Length: 241
Image 1 (cartoon, rainbow, N blue to C red):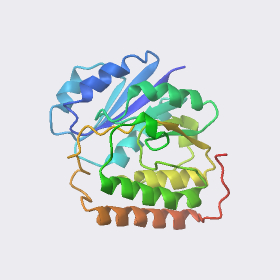
Image 2 (cartoon, one colour):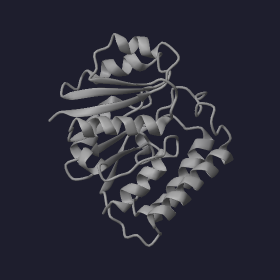
Image 3 (tube, rainbow, N blue to C red):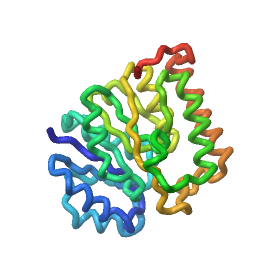
């Protein structure tokens, strides 16, 4: 069965070819690149690589917008399943089969860097670990999902399940809106343990929300607004067991 691998990129010239070379292993996969306004050599590298599609933003529109455009592509082209992964070498393509296997029974299979600590030797920046922990703990009662890592972008999806969502959060609050809408839609979710890999500790959020508290408060506001809009409460029954 053919499937799509959606790769959002922004100034990934040092790593994008390495990732594409590894993805060539998956002969039944179509690689869909969403270039979010890269200003380095990324566009010229992509011009000489054979992939299923390159969706190009003329300016940087946000991580969430890149994923939404990738989802629109796979829905329009009727792929049954898709995988999302980053291009910074922090997602190991060798774990893609874990997602594909579990999608037989689940709507969403989410990578977790904290599910199996034995897979990892790296350590995340302390501020990112703390923000992830706080948001994940708050999402569990709101969604009923037993999440251990709410921000990992390495995921597998049934495309028909994505059709049930109305995603609008264009930036880094995207995962929060995603989880709340998935819960409201009754999607079945599980996790797949993946390694926690940090190649570049200097990378930031495109100079947005560099301050830990500012970033956390932004995420909490997104969560509050979306939960209120959807009418979610901690009394939601678990739906991933």
